[in-house]
Length: 321
Image 1 (cartoon, one colour):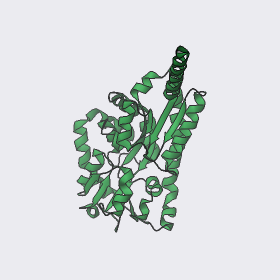
Image 2 (cartoon, rainbow, N blue to C red; image 1 turned 180 degrees about the vertical axis):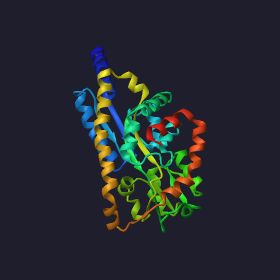
Image 3 (tube, helix red, strand yellow; image 1 turned 90 degrees about the vertical axis):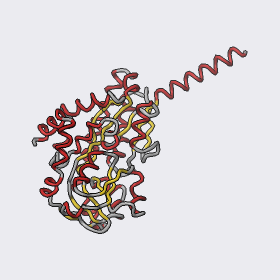
Image 4 (tube, helix red, strand yellow; image 1 turned 90 degrees about the horizontal axis):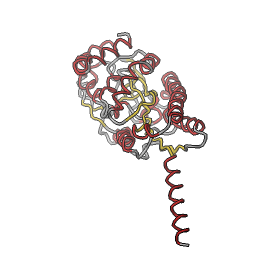
């Protein structure tokens, strides 16, 4: 009798372990309404359907399992399997990915996507694998603009001395140091409360992030600086990636690509349609002197061309600079 009980317990344990192994945790830091949030839901549907029930997806949005840096660590450690992350956070583990944010590298979103979907994306994936991560594809995190509590920053001189929140990304810090600001990194999930507390004078993000997090209600002065681009790398833990079969890998890649089309279109749509919505809610928009900004941040290229000459050259060529 005891043998039968032990056998039943062992079988139950095996079934439980199998069920747990088949669960894919997809975590990210975006809130409802953000294109990343919508695309993650689409990814979940596509991946589960493609795997014919062999895998279920547990979505963990809104930084419920940690901020972007913590999620990358969790992916490497196998706590989660996939994360739609941020370029800034990932640059702490894969510094080269930060080069996508060189100032004024891309004129528009389609130009950035063409580069990411080509040789440059493959180069970055190889470097990510050295850090225990597999890049499944690149979603979008927009061309970024500055918001301020009390004024526009139409000219570089307006930014001097500004206390500005940046993502945990050295490239963004370098850009604003070149402009004479006082940048400081902070997790996106902590940004609204920090702005309300007066820790910063302002911040920088694409319009979709500004609107979905209601940052324009706190910092209503929006200057369209367009100073840099950021991607949303969708990454898997390399150990998990290497443990799954080819069919499951294809499901993950296809789901990333298909959900990415939706995510990119929503991001682009946000850039084109959010301004009137934000203005109706009290935001004030200003155009920036982009030539002056480009001249003021030219030194950032010199720094990174010395550190990563091949990748910077490949990026400039691909971007048509």
